[in-house]
Amino acid sequence: MIGFGLGYWFLGRRFHVGASPERFIQVLDSNGKVLESKWEPYRAPDHFDEDGLSHLKPYVQRLLDSHNWFTTISIFTPDGQHGFALWKQGGVVTANLIVEARKEPAREKRIREFFAGRSIQPSEDYMAGNGGVSDSTRVMSWPITGNADTVTSLAQRIAQELCDIPNHSGLDIQFEEQADERGKYAGLDRITIESGPVVSRRPGH
Picture 1: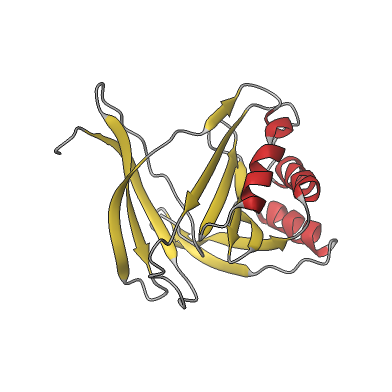
Picture 2: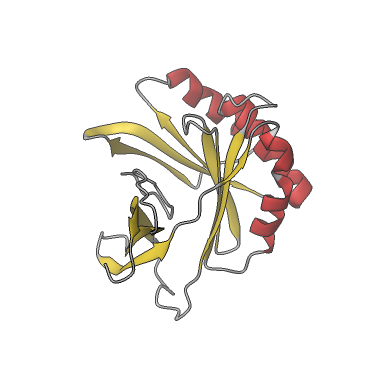
């Protein structure tokens, strides 16, 4: 599992007839201390069979309008192999990409050149482990600004040029918000939310 800055990473799904899908969430501080553990309902992403990128703007508008502690849009092909996420935390919107560093050096170079050409420097840029292999994955977050039209246009170009998503491809788009109702995370400079497998629990289990 990879958690960087703040995010949701789904490890699998399992559903049973008559039960509601849920996922187990842990909130950790920068030292890895578990601050909170909980079950929460899981809502499947919105699926578009084709022209998925043309449906992106309303989600971006919701992201920009959100006043919750953390808001995210996951934008992926239905097979989960191509995509990225937009996050908003503390009023800052970032485009978040993961690269298999040893297998995709050309893609990493392409990502860096794309943002450098727009004078954007990464706010997060480090190596992380994946699948038991240390320092195999490059994690990058790039701050982006603008209104819904500007952010949507940039997100579409990121999807097409950096994630190899064809313009007319189908997409799964998932919008999520995480509230900090009691202000328990105020003052913490770095929080990670790790999400375990989606399972189905019957009431009382």
